[in-house]
Length: 522
Image (cartoon, rainbow, N blue to C red; front, top):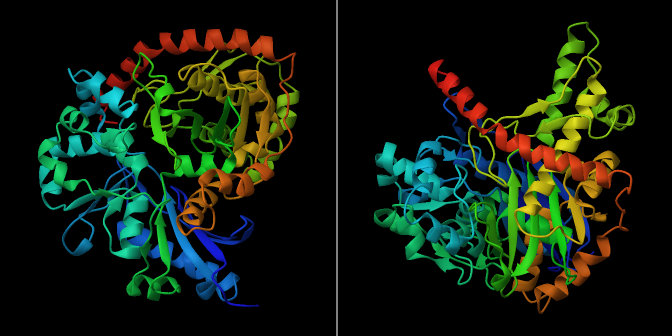
């Protein structure tokens, strides 16, 4: 076997797992290695992660990949990075961490978000970024830090995101990419920082914390000798700074293949719903919610709505069953319970209950923003049993998906599905009927790592354009369309109207529960 540069490594540093995946230049996945991530949740709404440990875990994942791929270092033509979006990773003197990162799960900025959204410049900020304010974003978090812990910002020299922090460790270069720069602090039309946005966030005096913007589909930086020693790769290997993981996953799964009206949903722990449009065709909703995130293709962006929690709702329901059965000494495994979902769905009636899937303690961010939103089950009577609850939870994910696409305009003509839940036939049937659109599943195992690897493939000249790369890496992996069940479509049409009515009506209830929690110090 010749040790020639023929591979691209995609690194996807997610919230739960850091993955390193090797692809050949034709887009075939050869091997992968992963390391579990770790972060801490606090009673005050905090969600934090160690910067130094994240880099160490990333390096360990790459060394693990080297154990699986013979001659990996010499065969690697480029490394590409993506990672969890939003959040704030502050770096100070000598490129060391100021403190643990605030993750996208961190809810502490909620009071500042509420104040900023009432500000006179909020609509102008939204129309520049295309992105609604929420507690996840670095802009909101920096604005909150500036109010409650300014000394933290005083110690910082640059504010990065997860993948940017890894890129700094790989190359010694402080930078971010056009996607996170523009949806947080910039204008999606120019892909540059915006004075209007920075002023609306009250961050004029902290503008020096924003790093240079680097497009990893056009240029790379060399792997540093110190990073080479830690990862087992060769110094000088080109490193591409990818876009945020949402876009990279959608790119790898087929959000843009040249077919009009297609969309892509990633249904994992969270739900990410995207459609590709030209920047001049963006639908900016009256509520000022969602994201507009650039694609690594000229003038193309994704409109995005994201649910804070998707399969986390199913995990909760299964955990209830597991805990109860454990009381009697016969607790099944999580995998055994997952295998029962289709059977439970068959024993229940469609549309009998309404479930709002806002199980996250950070509330909801798409298609509305409310840090106090909580999950609810509506319509129970004495005849309902656990299978009915499971069906309601799964249908709740379908309703939430439809809710998100409705906020972006018309329903998609075809939905490409990725994420762990794409393997569930029950969920696919519910999603297809909820949106009344056919679904295609990508067989790509690691879509996020593939998306950023595609950027590197274009950057090093393996493909002339991103569209040429998509034609070889993405389109052939899309499965056959699965049509919606005509018997379910009218049921879910009616269910969605009631879902929206009850969702809107619950807002005062959420307010009351939040007040009660505050009074109890919870």
